[in-house]
Image (cartoon, rainbow, N blue to C red; front, side, top):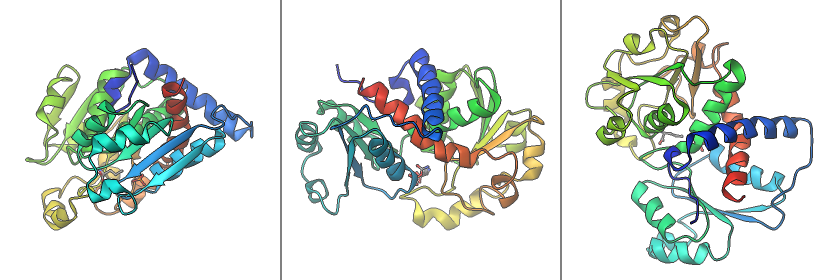
Length: 299
Ligand code: CP
Ligand code: NVA
């Protein structure tokens, strides 16, 4: 059966832990200038229905470093954008490339694509979740502080795609997750229910941050929610991750943000640009952890 990566739950715990270790190894190799080209002649198709800086550049660079090739496909230039059925596109594209990465709105589309693909499909963000970012975040935490298992993570802000992937990560990487969202912005009930033994939900950023080893947040209005921006800024008042909030976490606590960030909204400049922030390490790790992911899926 073709192995896909639509959510973190598609890979079991021991394989995910090995994948993080491999990402750390690949990073060391890359920094040492070691040439490693296991993917000569292999091709990754990349479908983007939404904007991206990190995801596109990290996947494209990963394929180039590995001696392969990546093809950027936007709805403006493909028949997918003119209504060709997802199932047909999946069948044809997967007959020509070795793996396919998709960033889109509906998670259902990625699932339907995967069902009809003969090669691995990678979810590079849907409205439902963003599993690739969690590989990079967990790698960054592990590099700075060791194993994340048994630690406490606080998610402050929207119960969005990133929050959902943090919940799945709590299951797979075995950490406790305290989530604080404004009322009405809670994460999906079914995703929460599957992790009920290790997560807590509240409407108090201070309570969630208390004693945390890592604090994570994300924009208040995600891609596709631009018209809600004004209302969300009001609804999320008090949810900025600032130094006062960081001070209620463990003294050794770290901060991360998947980026792009809005300084002065979900995070203060002092925190994201400060010494506790592993945001920039995690962003770079998109390259290394996705190399490990591609290796794993194309093994
Ligand atoms: N964090 C992340 O996925 O960034 P991009 O939207 O720039 O790809
Ligand atoms: N929640 C954000 C994440 C961007 C990487 C969004 O979906 O826009």
